[in-house]
Image (tube, rainbow, N blue to C red; front, side, top):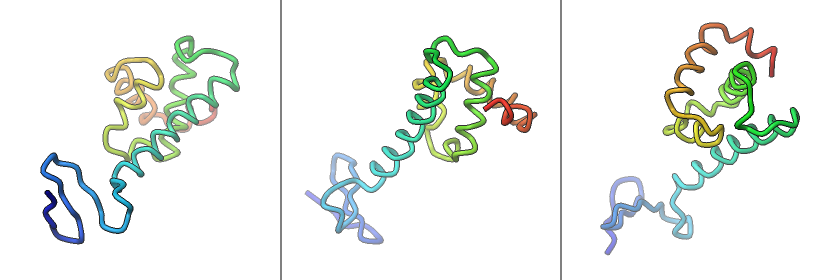
Length: 113
């Protein structure tokens, strides 16, 4: 069963949110898929350019990669840190530590990208 909420949003009892006129595709799913593809494209491109597997990236490589992802606006998205951590095959705490460093000295890491 569907219930209509404000702004033309239909909610299913299971909790899925659908916007009228989208052919049943969840609007949030489209946005999420786009930015996660951006994460994968940037990480994949970075590792291909350097000829190294993501697990073998140096700390400087990771800092430069996070600066590049930040410049692309990835970290303005909800759940971005766990998504980036999976793509880079590191823990979330590692991403937070590296982001702290990138944000302290953004110019020095932008040059390395």
